[in-house]
Image 1 (spheres, rainbow, N blue to C red):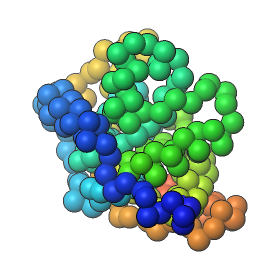
Image 2 (image 1 turned 90 degrees about the vertical axis):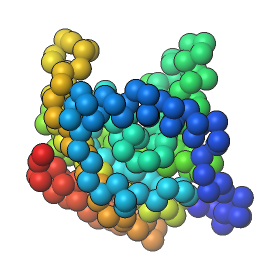
Image 3 (image 1 turned 90 degrees about the horizontal axis):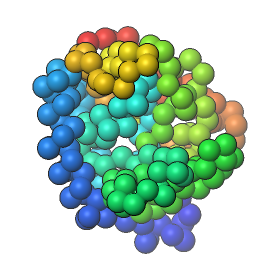
Length: 219
């Protein structure tokens, strides 16, 4: 993180976002996770509840951002397509919940700048390591974005595995099925010392191995 800006970085997300997060968590997402999906959470005590953080995970379902944020005990800010911010009310709601707009097909550096801004505002920034959903939830082709963000901001990464979310919906259906879900939180990983590509590759592979190892633990 820019050393000149460091003294001014917030340690927590905005109060309005925290209120919305807890309201939505306890009224909607948490009951769905624990009752409908029979959710299990392991390692939640490893999550730093204040200060900037890069949460990096696998991705297999549209439900993943909400489920992951629910299990962190704090809001996790994710990128969202720009068109969503043109919808009245929805724009305000997702902004409070930490979403930030990114144009479809825009260069990766645009998303990275937005994530860095969220970190400077005290958020935990969520990054799906492969960028897109995978069929079974395992990571096979990780991208360097999370490591680059952590290197530039000088903040740690937290590996998280979402197990079972690939089965939430059938192809062609958006209605969630009551499948068992397990979330496992790993240990904090320090940021790389530089943005050198070899260092970013090494860290990205480390994150991949950690998340896939948590995934192999299954239910």
